[in-house]
Image (tube, rainbow, N blue to C red; front, top):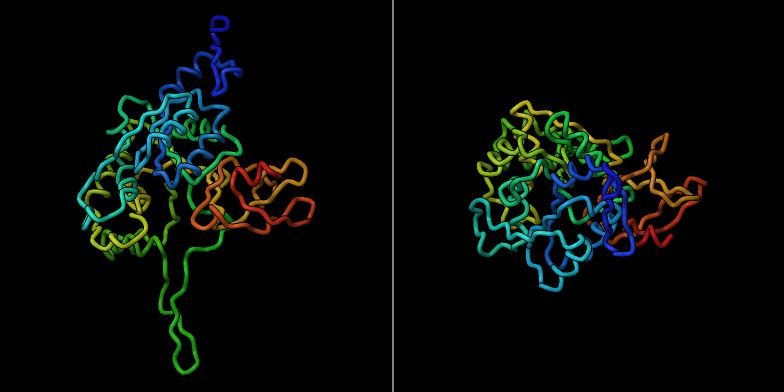
Length: 330
């Protein structure tokens, strides 16, 4: 302790330390950061944890083990000051043909049951392994926002984002007619819960569960778990993922539980829009004026490996990946 109200907290490097107010230290210790990985995803989760180094000492860390070797666990533990708990999430509900499914699919069900696997915390901050933090203070923002409603999450909404709603057309004698829409969310809800639920909720903004903070006493857990347990997953065996965020989204909507919505800068979906790059500082910025700094980069899908032409604030363009390593190299 440094003085009566401050702690001297060691960082990952023993040569570094941070001075933290006692109240902040005790509050953050009551929250845990959760993620998941198998050996294939260790490089991405390592980049996530490395980007959180300025604050990682303030939190415990939980990791769903989806197939990690001992060497991978040791490497991840070293990035968490050794305060990491690895848990096999198991299958939280029966899934058709689950014995033949890859183990990573367990995480899509287990996210709704985090308090069962990591009990006794005031709140939980989930972070997908394909994210990194240009500004780690985003974690504190999520925690503070969750005080208002019990949980904080972002939506896939921004004027720069590409629309994920597509028209379905029909051509007759050279004329094109719109016969409906094609929506990822609509289709998921219809498969899981039927047409009536899809009509009611399918065209509402998409909640993104890549990062969120939910407090332990939030009713969101109960309603999310109910939707996970009752969803029709009979057609999910051959799909890449089971859509946990669909269940969180409509479970909380049906219960009239509204989250504290976080801005796009706190979960910037690279696949939907490229950020602006500051020519001087190399910071990633919201392309919409006044160009606020992006605090969380979400490397969805191909954006984990793809290079993009990125516009800079001086009007020029640079070709680069948007991983933490690539941006730091600039």
